[in-house]
Each structure stands twice: as C-alpha cells, then as structure tokens.
Image (cartoon, rainbow, N blue to C red):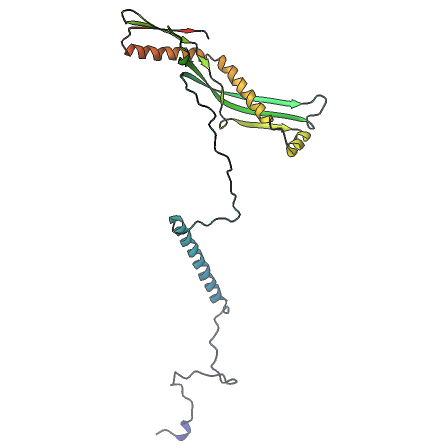
Length: 251
C-alpha cells in the first residue's frame, strides 16, 4: 500500500501531460533546430519558384498546341501596308521567241565632287555591284508575206526571219547591292535634310547601261540565231520536210 506522502508526488508515467514553463505555466516551446527557422522559409521559396516555372512550361506547351491565344509583346514592332492595289495600264500580245539569255555583273564606281573643294567636305562616291540579265529574241510577229516558201514537191522549205534583238536589261535588285559608300560632311548634312532622291536611280541606270553594252559585245544575238535555227529545223523536219533553210534579214 502506498504511503500518503507519495500520493501528491508528480509522476512521469502520464505521457499526455506536457511539461510547463515554471514562470508562465505555459507549455515549453519546441526546440529550434540549428540555424534557426530560415531553412523552412528557403524550402518554401524554392517550392514557389518551382511551381511558377512549371506553370510557365505548361502555358507555353498549351500555347504551342493552339489551345490558348498567343501572348504578344505590347511594345513589339508592327508594320502597316497602305499600298493601293496595282492598276492595269495596258496589255499586249507577244510573239517573241526567246532564244538566248545572258547574265551579267558589273561594279559601278560613281563619284561626284567639286573642284578645289576637299573630299572630306563635299564628296560622294558609291561602289555598286549590279547583277542583271538580257534576253535575245526573235519576233515572229514581224514576219512578212512570203517569209515561208515551200517547194513544189513539198520536201523543202525556206524561212526568212527578222534578225534577233536584245530586250531591255533586267536589273535584279535582289542580287544587286551597294558595296561601299563615301560622303563628305556637307553631303551627310544634305541627307539629313532631304537628300537626293535621284542619286540611287543614277547608279541603277549606269549599271543597266554597262550591262546592255556588254550584252551587245557578248555574241548573244549570234547564239539566238543558232538556237532559233535548230528549233525550227527540228519542228519542220517533224512535219515531213527533208530540207529546211533558215535565213535572217536585217531589221
């Protein structure tokens, strides 16, 4: 039998009773792990950042599939095309047979300056690489009466054609470019004020003139004559003519 003095003694067998602070009577605070409470806050921040990154990945994936509208930059560059529709000015029937084509390239070195004025003050020099093509054609629409003469037995035929001509030079702006450009101080000031709108056109025209001159000396028309002769000879031979004669008349 227990003694009376032991009845009021505290016991440690009751685990549900929390030890209390002697001064306040409140339960003791749980021990703080080493390093303080910053570790839990850092882990929470990492979880938030991870969740945000996952959300961005999901949104981008959904946007790629087209389920959500595209996110646009409010300050992105936009281009507005207010060009009016093209108007048809004229139409014409063509009867040209393009028998040859030449591709040319020229380097235009154009300089505009003033006498007794230093280049650093007033000077303009442009190096322009121009690429263009020229066609050589035979105009079948210019055939006159009696241009085709057939023999009595139907075995031979003679065709008189106008001499081949060169078409206008076609300057390819996609392959042409300004290689270098030098401008004096006053030229630069003039460009800021308004510039010369015909300056670039002068370079283009000079390149076309040089290519046209080169096409005349390239033998392009002679090649067009030969190609046209071969084409008509094969065509008329397939019609049963045994002898085909092709001649050219000066225009």
